[in-house]
Image (cartoon, rainbow, N blue to C red; front, side):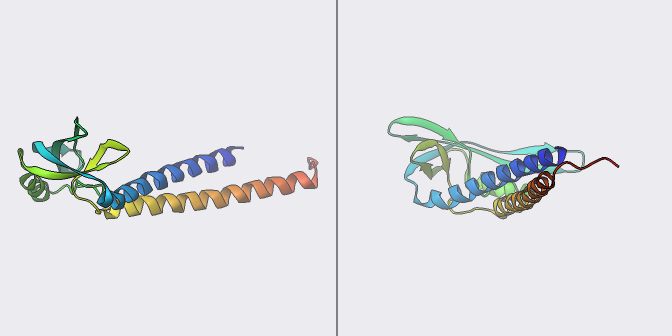
Length: 163
């Protein structure tokens, strides 16, 4: 029973990874065809994140736009991610999208709260997460089939007598 539970948890974990990565890949590519609204950068800073082992730098760019007269704000530059960890790369993005800069904002037609500025960039991490999730899903699925097949065979043979 414990093996089936573990295989089920791995199936769930793999499905979550594949879904999350796949959704990012889909949005990255679909965003190229989304409607565009004019936006304005309302804040642009570099966030410093410290951990025990290193210091990372994250560009935090927030922009405002409106769709059908309804105001929105977002901070997604691209669905491929823009967290390189390097200070010069974070500064490059915050200079490119300085406060007050006008920019075209691509927004999801069914949900205008989902938006991006740089479309089509899926990023290697989205592919890795998707493929890793699919691999876990496949391995856990094969293990689950093997467990169930083994259980079915043992039940067909009938009860085993203790020795």
